Length: 232
Image (cartoon, rainbow, N blue to C red; front, top):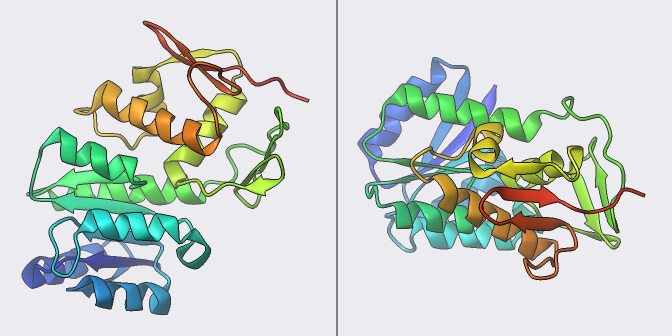
């Protein structure tokens, strides 16, 4: 049974989600404060974190930033962010900080379950790709979901990892933003190009790549992106 941790100060909502997720073979736990949430992350080692933005002590953005900055402690914990605000800018910030998906309140519980399943499938699906050949100092161990650049391990979120694998599977193929969004199955359609651009920018930064002198990812103006690294 998958372990789900919910950090949300809405106690009523938390209880409802615990009951609802149980129907889908998920064991949900609720923390009403960030400090309690961090305790529970270490205790139950959840498979996914549902994180509200508006919280006491510190907001969800800060929590997401802290978790991603301490991957040696928290690993690549999948994060689904919730917010009472539907502004695209807030949702872009969540993606920039490394959230795997974003859902505005109010939401349909069935949609939440669908998004959870999508994230968990992406984070655990090791059988889709058996092997990725090294490229320009970039080496991927698919069995361990580990990526090394020039010998150093990279801390990639689930979606960053999926994007990199997609690019490396199809070198020199130009992907439009819509194609990338559809392939990754986790970016809300409302965000369109801005979300894809944010994701590519994050991955480029971790690959120490730039759009002006691309080592791996090249922008094809007016079309999308292509992976230009040469396989060894």
